[in-house]
Image (cartoon, rainbow, N blue to C red; front, side, top):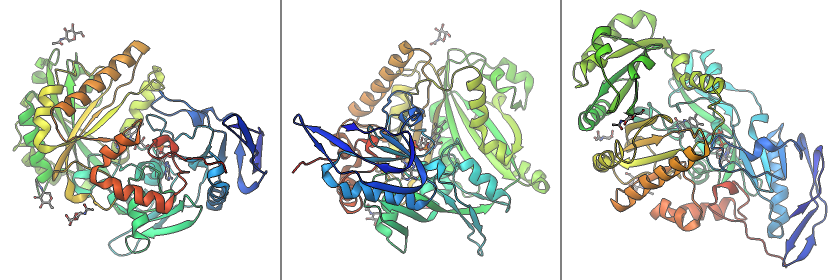
Length: 512
Ligand SMILES: Cc1cc2nc3c(=O)[nH]c(=O)nc-3n(C[C@H](O)[C@H](O)[C@H](O)COP(=O)(O)OP(=O)(O)OC[C@H]3O[C@@H](n4cnc5c(N)ncnc54)[C@H](O)[C@@H]3O)c2cc1C
Ligand SMILES: *[C@@H]1O[C@H](CO)[C@@H](O)[C@H](O)[C@H]1NC(C)=O
Ligand SMILES: *[C@@H]1O[C@H](CO)[C@@H](O)[C@H](O)[C@H]1NC(C)=O
Ligand SMILES: *[C@@H]1O[C@H](CO)[C@@H](O)[C@H](O)[C@H]1NC(C)=O
């Protein structure tokens, strides 16, 4: 496709030359008036993402100022019909792993430019915030805190956009109780693949509402989201304890997510052959028994760390400490490994950003990230652990490995999100960075071996944030839910204009 270049303009004129069968075909120039602007240079950022492995430049980037800019742009591409290969991708904060927010030769819409007001509404027992989809969760948090409120369900890292995580799921240590972020949304404003602006919820346009949640950007671009809130705690007790035996670790972790009265956040870490683990924690965590902790050896061992928090307000500290003591007394961790600290709620939620700043200062943030996220049925987690931890995975020096269970009753099966077949499943996230190209190959190899192991042991695993090359693989991913996913595509984005970087549907050009 050959395209006329402009520099910066708020009228997009497309003179599109399609090279097909060596026969160029040109379309008439049609202007798209917008309040924001289009850029044609300096768009390298839109061809990159956090994964830093796939790069493809768009033809143009739209920096929208109003929702109508997004609608006009999509409508324009919709009216070009199948004579044009033009596609459109919303880009949140570009924290995808393998090009999911890119649009090769297409239009990338920079959702962060679409700033709007955030509005907190306090109505009886169910307060909510209406937020622009391009807003970062950290900003949503700070805005809600002015009203003493906060969203209920999070991701580990808050410098991600509302629209970006809602297009996936948004899973973290609160999901066992509240479900993922897509279970905590009341209403969305969406621009479909035909350029229509649609407000949807459980009551209104419910099929689009459910489709868009976890919908990988396939059915529309979310422009606003109404997110459920709760009173925000001021402080957090943050606890880590270590196990050497997976079965004991998993039993305790499951017991905690099933319990009526329990912690507010439950995650876990796999640690393989880390030297001086306890020393690494010392800057932020206090061992309850420093002498015993000093004796603890992590070198050469496979360990499992249970990570927990309890929220509280300053006047509740005494009784929170009692609750924690009583919950911990039921657990079978290695006694010398009890570490406790307390921080503000914001410090806890924004913890990965603190790690980001450290990694950035060492040049370790903008590296390739060959991440692998798996959802594993509870009945198969022991087979998985035996095969992978300390076997395929021989060390965790390149980045953390997270593991924690969630109960599916908090997931709405009408959304586009795909879970394993059992009531309870584990999220296992391998989150390495690759320091040099050799390291990248090794990590990619390791991912392949893990996936092959899951396949041959028939574990019934689903990937989270996956990247597939073919529609066949996507069909297998969705399983019996493929049909409804494809139906929704033909209803809301029949020309397959949206989110081409997911590689699920391909726009087919016909030249008549
Ligand atoms: C350090 C780090 C930690 C993370 N931790 C977690 C975690 O704890 N839990 C978790 O669930 N995920 C986590 N993620 C993954 C995160 O959810 C994804 O990266 C997701 O893509 C959000 O990033 P983004 O806002 O930058 O979206 P982008 O990467 O920009 O977009 C993601 C996809 O959604 C589409 N999209 C973006 N905005 C919209 C919109 N408004 N409407 C429709 N489609 C849209 C894009 O086209 C693309 O296909 C983490 C990522 C990083 C980098
Ligand atoms: C999951 O949640 C449902 C509904 O709350 C409950 O009935 C079920 O017992 C839970 N499963 C487990 C294993 O705790
Ligand atoms: C642990 O790592 C060290 C190097 O950091 C290595 O020498 C040792 O063999 C490893 N031990 C095991 C059990 O893998
Ligand atoms: C969703 O779950 C409900 C209740 O568990 C069940 O009746 C229904 O068939 C499920 N729907 C789909 C689409 O799987």
